[in-house]
Image (cartoon, rainbow, N blue to C red; front, side, top):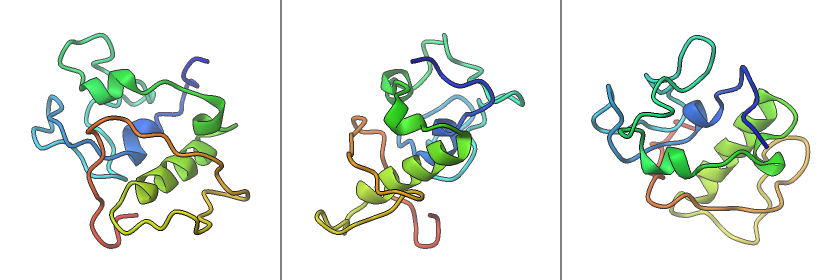
Length: 117
């Protein structure tokens, strides 16, 4: 699967704890990456300074859904699922249906502050 043109959900919803050019402290979840272009593409996609967690994140039907809105909902859920205090076994909804699985992307997740998600 390839990235959906005009999406950029992973560059907005996910937190990144490693430096990004223009964001030396990484970025919190819900904040648009400074490297996301106006047409929602990564300006440093082929740049070796691109964080490893970004390079390792691969689009999938489960993560990307059928729209940017579905992708944002899933990725926000994924952020909650990797935040301390998440209760496995409890039902968390990303959109109209429950999200069936969680995957982790190395050390890229930091924890959103209260009200950030």
